[in-house]
Length: 300
Image (cartoon, rainbow, N blue to C red):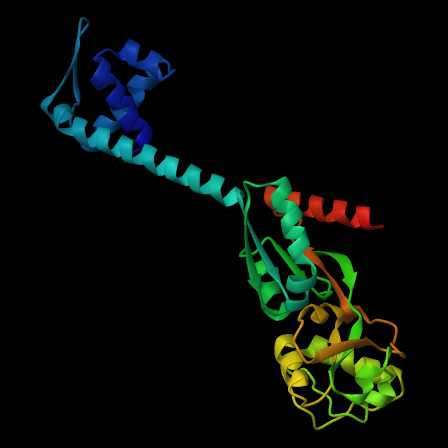
C-alpha cells in the first residue's frame, strides 16, 4: 500500500464525498478515484459503497480506517523527525585539528565565529593529519586544520600560519641566559625529539633545521610524541628541544624558550592551514571560512 493511496482513502472516508475529498487534497476527483480503485484492487476488496447520492464505508473500509489513520500519522511524525534532524545537522559544524592548529589557530577563530553565529554548535576533534583527512573525505568532518596535504581532487587548502621553531631549555641551563641560541650549541646537548614514525612532520622540521645549518641531527636523546610531554621532559632536565612557537603557550615552570639564531627558511611542513571539500554544501562551514578570511584580511 502506498501512502498516497492511503491518504486518498482517508480523505474520502472522513468526507464521505469524493468531490470534497478531492478539493481537500487539491486533486481532480478522477485522479482521487483512480488512487482509491488501485488500493481496492491491491487489497482485493471494495472500500466504499458508491451511489449517485452518497458514499459509505464497507465493512472492509471500516476495518482499514484506524490502521490508515495510524500509518498516515506515523509517516507524518517520521517526516517531522527527519526534517528536525536535518535542521539540527545544518547547525552543527564538525572541525578537526592537529595539535598546533588546535592550540595556536582555533581558539580565537572559534571565539569570533561564535560571536557572529551563536546558534551554530561546533565540535572539535584533535587528531593527527593521517586520521583527519580520511574523516573529512568520509563526511565525518566539515573542516580540518592541518599541515599542507598532498594534492587531492576535491580538496581545497588555505594556508594560514607559518610555524617558527624555538629552543626549549631548562631554566637553570647555561644557554638559557642567552637571548638567542645557535643550533651548533644545541647540537652538543641531549636533544628530545618527536618520533620519526608517528610524528613525521614534526621530526622533519627539526631535522631540516639542523641540516640547513650543516649539522648532523643529534642522536641518543629521549623521544616524545606530544609537545606537552616534550616540554615536561625539558623541565625535568632530561635535555633540550626544538618546538614550534605555539608551544611557548605551554608555560611549564622550569622551561624557557629562546629564538634560534641560525633558523633556516621555513619548510612547507611548517605551514598550518584549513582544508575542506568545497563541492559539499555546508552553510556553517562556509560561514566559518568567511570569519577566517575576514580575520586574515584584518591582520594584513
